[in-house]
Image (cartoon, rainbow, N blue to C red; front, side, top):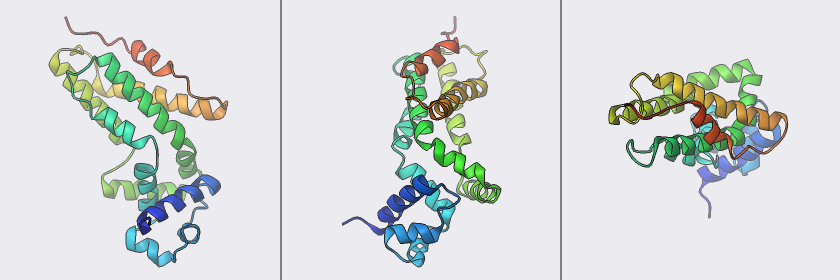
Length: 193
């Protein structure tokens, strides 16, 4: 039998996908999970923590992105590693774009969510920081030139991935499987001489 916390996260994902984050109240989530609202607060401090749980534990793209960002410098090729990160980022952003958009639809929700993520030491900037740290580590191995700006490289690659996810929803089309390799190639990262 599924654990209460798991049932709450499953219900929260359904409610958020069906109604958007603004209308995904704790009351609606509890109702969809078949629990009282008080049961939610035994497992989560607030709605933002539930949302973060949905992103981290119910998004099919979170673990692959997290794993891709944990790549060890000096393994495989830089291009292969960055392409894997870009592929995982596009999948994560594509799946979660509707959820992200709903946060920005309501200023109060955005403020609360931003504050809660800061308290938890989490947030979308962590992906950029992890990628920049990987680029810095590869610079130390000599596989990326020392003149490369790690933060700009992370911003450019992840920004392209996010834009790709946005456009695939706007069009709507499936993400282009060749996009990650094209983005990495466009960065022109070559081994230091």
